[in-house]
Amino acid sequence: MLLVVVLASCARRPPDPPPVAVWPTDRATCFAALGRERVAFTDWLDAPTVDVCAVPAPVVVQASTAAMTPILQTSCPMMLAWARFEPELQRLASRRLGSEIARIHHYGSYNCRRMSGNQRRMSLHSTGQALDISGFTTADGRYISVRDGWRGRRDEAAFLRDLGQAACRHFNVVLTPNHDRAHRDHIHVDIGPWRFCGA
Image 1 (cartoon, rainbow, N blue to C red):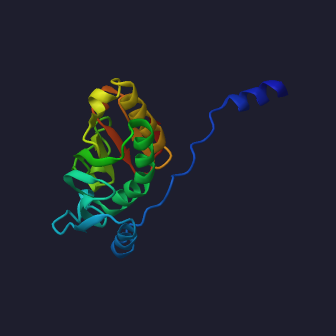
Image 2: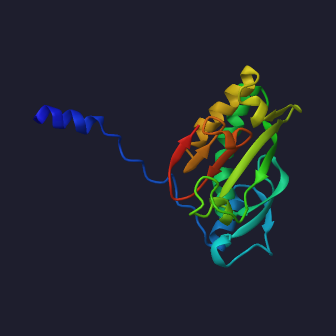
Image 3: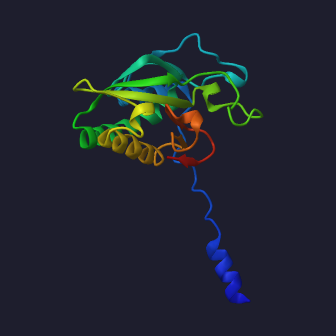
């Protein structure tokens, strides 16, 4: 009987690890941290600041190690998390693609809406704490889209899949084309209170 109990406890799924980080939501603290990451940003002056779709420390971002296309409206904590992930992004691009990333293409961060898979909860996009990446342009002029590249050329697929795995070490939730059809054309990352790696 004791052996059965021991085996059953070994077979149990281990608990999820704690969140990867707690990002500063105080405007002054976060802005200072973002400035140290050499992100080109300004204050998002007309961002929502009350109710369920209030954005903590809202910013407008032109570029970090790469230009944002289009210019990004997001929360400072989300951009800080992304900026600290970018060195790994650039290392992966150099290794897999032979060139660093010059431009990051995205579908946006802020969108005041409920979760697509759970209408009872507000999406992390509703507070600018998520980001949907659609593709990349390399320094040598090559465009890699998530939609076409995920199962496309070997080097592009390797880069995007490595990127998804690496993102799981930096963000609390990562959703890729491996997760479901809704993410077939982008990689979702967020800094919400849950953990899930859909890479």
